[in-house]
Length: 248
Image 1 (cartoon, rainbow, N blue to C red):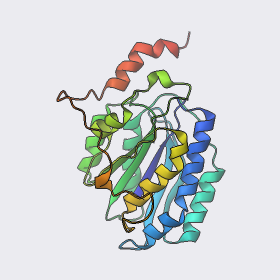
Image 2: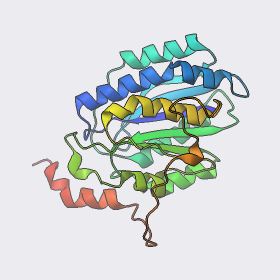
Image 3: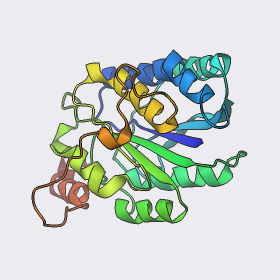
Image 4: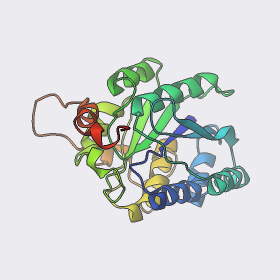
């Protein structure tokens, strides 16, 4: 599997939240269950890269494509993430993150049998192109998109977030065969959620491993309404409230 970790660092997240997020990814990357899942895969290894994103074009690479086949490989990546310093940036462009992730997959020095984008975020798209267009471009390249919606409310930009972010991710962001999302409703859940998500994406561990839920068993945030979900909700909220951040 070729896996892209796309991590939200928009300013709606506080420095404390960015630190929790960084530490959660660092702990998950070399967790014994994750390493075991990699070893039990068909090829015994995965290729992985990670970048941080915010507004359209606000990209910071955390580490380049790396082959992970054992605990030593995983430890090196975990150390890189632990030593990184997340830098909050303005706006939220999930579409920009997806497009950059597709580009990274196209540039990968490894030919992954499965190509997966793992995108986390605490709000809807409000910058760059429409998220549906970016999703369709990824799916057309046979890339699977999984989501980690951060449904927290203690950051400084909560006014631009939505209460049904899990539904937004289900309707507007994730896609492809076997795609899934893992909602995070409080920051104390984050380390376990990242670890569980990586294990599900790698998909190699037996189902009786504690805290591991098969993708098809994850709760689906289906809406009772038959009305189409508004995947431009983030852009509309920004237009209503952009005066809060406009320069004088």
